[in-house]
Length: 263
Length: 307
Image 1 (cartoon, each protein chain N blue to C red):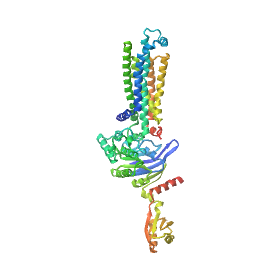
Image 2 (image 1 turned 180 degrees about the vertical axis):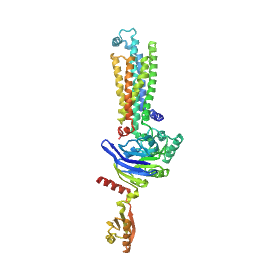
Image 3 (image 1 turned 180 degrees about the horizontal axis):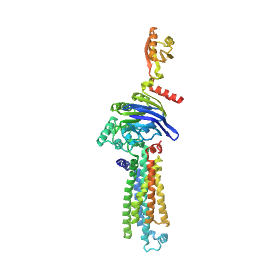
Image 4 (image 1 turned 90 degrees about the horizontal axis):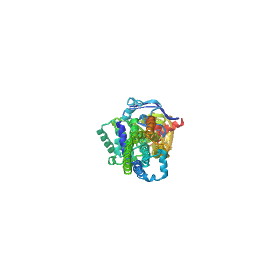
């Protein structure tokens, strides 16, 4: 464990210096946690003047007394999905950078020649992706709640968050998702020598998230606690498989003989 | 200290090393010489427990590499072919990071970092990012990394590659000095002069072992049976005096110089000298030609190619 923490500390120092990692995170936070909720909630009243919007509300929710409150509730379900963007994006930026930088600098062989265990190396690399992801997701969650509550209070005089759905996403679904993406990024990084292509794993996994947003906007599907718990359970079942594969790939001999290295 | 028995390693259909065996004694400097693709890096990786042999056995400090990988990595230091440093952290932090994986007390670790950075003239730039170092400086930093835990065994893959002559000289002197500290050195090199100056024994390899011997033993081969005589004037005038000696297999002349190939120099050399002196020939010098390691190496490698 001591060696894993040593690896983690060194990696974090390097990541802090790497603006290619923290700059996109900062931009996404500003867009998804501040600008979008502010725009959606504060600008929701004029939308209700549009007949199509009212028809949409009627179609999805039936006849309602307070369409503005229902609309904001619907917006919150979209924002709920945005909570998953950080757990998907951050590990897919950090894990490949951490592994492929080792390949670029030819530092893996001397590192593996030390008494460090490959399990400690994998754990160190995984913590490097998971701990910042958890921290950033939590900060993002708090910012989003504050922004939503303030703007909803200004608009409607009530505080809608946090609710059970948001807590499930923040505390259950997000950590599971970030673990899977970390492991997937480790697996992909072993076969890649290019940071950008390895980081593509995050983009691929984010696609289903956009699909859920699309289905909700089309009025075909609405997230609720049951769906979120089922989703969490399915992802939880996937966890041991990706972990097993990552452990297999993180074998000394595999790293030196089967991993794709820079020429 | 190191025993290698019938070691074979293949990568898919390509055989990297085939059935090689050798022993290295404590505090011996043992050089591994061979062309590119001869299996040198594969062997050094097996010795450092980074990869396993397909068959055969390696014992280091009495322990099998398959079962005691962690122990063996604790007592060995590896200098890889490419120096490989974390470019965005300082040289000092690079050494601190790698050394933290070894079981050495903090004070000792700090002392060793300072000792080796000073020894390799890097102390003044210890806080600079490793990425700003020249190739030679990185190589010296990598050597410091291999030594940081004071290993019993040092595995060096081309230690002077990329170094300027002064630094290379310093590194060679340092490797030589390791003998006094009872460090065993396994040296992979293309630099034949380096191998001949530093090694107790040399192993010439091309997938299989071609020859293991001391430099003296190698030089006493066929190439060692040559004698050079320099006369005061034209050599052709005198060679007829010695042509009749049956042990002389070949004579070649070039102005005042003659090179003789003699089957048994210890017996025949005095006869040759006597015959020439008795006939009043003025000899400037008479010298047994010692083959360079390069000549021996090329002969052995070519011989292997013919096979």
